[in-house]
Length: 234
Image 1 (cartoon, rainbow, N blue to C red):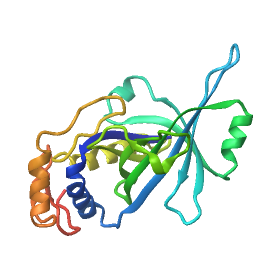
Image 2 (cartoon, rainbow, N blue to C red):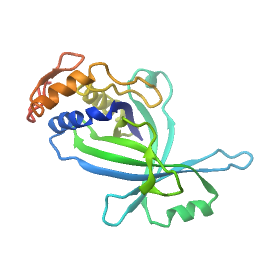
Image 3 (cartoon, one colour):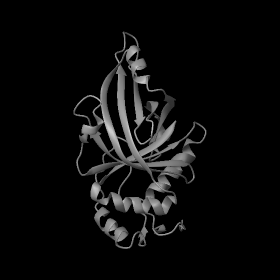
Image 4 (cartoon, helix red, strand yellow):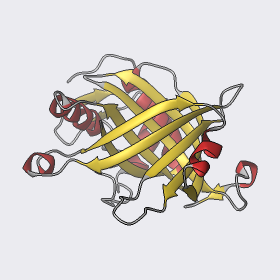
């Protein structure tokens, strides 16, 4: 199970976002270059269609593979009351022969993407991961070197945190609280809920870039945030 929110930011403001994240997280970023292959099976009568994603980490000296299955989102009154999406998720490391195996099991290629950017991994009330990436499509099968942006000038920002049926409320609260710090640059919401770019992004980016992150910003709840250094007033 995981908690997740997404948003978009203009590429010209990504450097400012990185400065802000560096100040919040206090850790160095990891480079991101992932080849994502989405596979679906053709269900027989009475069976439910299944979708899995094969993720190849191209940043490693020897590319590593992970298989990931995303289940349905949590529903009900409890789900409506929280601002993040809670969904089932299972992932595991696999060998480079995984694609051949899933093809033999009846799975067919639905689409493939190349995500290029960076990620921050840190602990802040939960084990949070923030990824900022351009999403690119392949013009030829598996041709990652020829990938082109799906939406030029726009990058996807995703915040995720692992959770369980026992602690998802606390994890969702931690993710929501963290997202408030990014509000001057972008708005994060449940996947599928389009909010567009934030009107204050340009001004916030200029402030962050003017002194390398020394400007004081304010969250929507007037929490004072100093984007320089690692001490935060919460």
